[in-house]
Image (cartoon, rainbow, N blue to C red; front, side):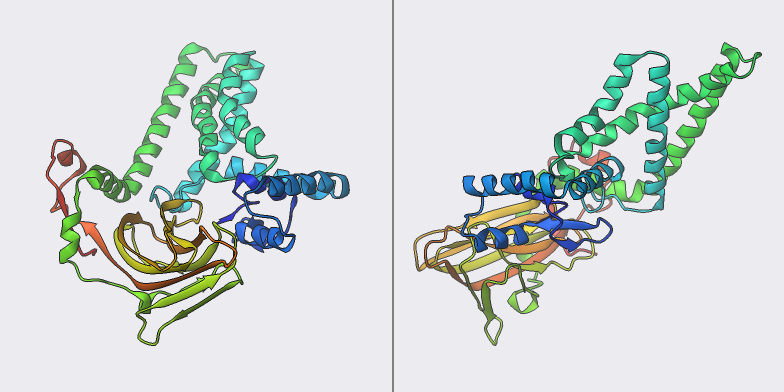
Length: 388
């Protein structure tokens, strides 16, 4: 899984130091587990080991001594991500658009004004409590590595600061106009409050269709009728999957009829072997069915989130050599989700597995016009059907 200056704690020292990586859309340089694993393997160091942690820590200290400017640039870059990136894309299903970005920047710009006003009024405790979420996010992770799922709470500072900002704006004219009194301040505060409320209503109306679908999915999650999947046709199999190597040391082939996938590698346990996009146009539920033979070592199969930040589901498939494993996985997947096969439980001979079957079908709940509130007291199972 790729990360912004590496996401996994066992290699956070490397993340804090290194500029090694690839260009990742708008974020600049990032380091990936793949690159870190390759570097460790070239030095004969096992992944997720005490030796690996000591190696990265040594590299981090050396970087401070040899390239302090680069280290400081990396730290400032992570500070910027923590304080200015709103992690909504492909995470909770809300659309990323200009309205969301404008709202975020309004909150960001209002926060320092609110904090300055609190300090000017000597309200030290209030200022500390409002600055605490963002400050803790920056100080706890910003110096070493960043993973958005750990610092989403940083935006609490902006939410808490905005009412203070409104109060500060209504109080400010009293310092410049002699005739400005409490009644004028209340009138201005009321006007600002009405304006903010109207903006929030307009923004909520803009998001209402998406929020309705999210509410329906949340209400139906525990009551989906998984048996209704059986009546649906399979929508994809090995012939439809566009696998690509996640590490160079992987050999894989698909039979001419597309009915069997063979792969082997000597990569470390936990390494990604193959990655394939799910190619879905909207969030939906997927049933994936597998059958594989473990020739050497084991494997794992799972779905990555749409932004590659976390596992949505994952299952280790291990057993004795030449054993056959069969099973099914039900999982909600997102736009941009990927199917990943990993290396697990390997020995001296590495990993060698053969998938005799790997297919899936996707479905969406059939709400029949129900609204979210109508589902609160409804305990009936909700059937799954083809997605529109």
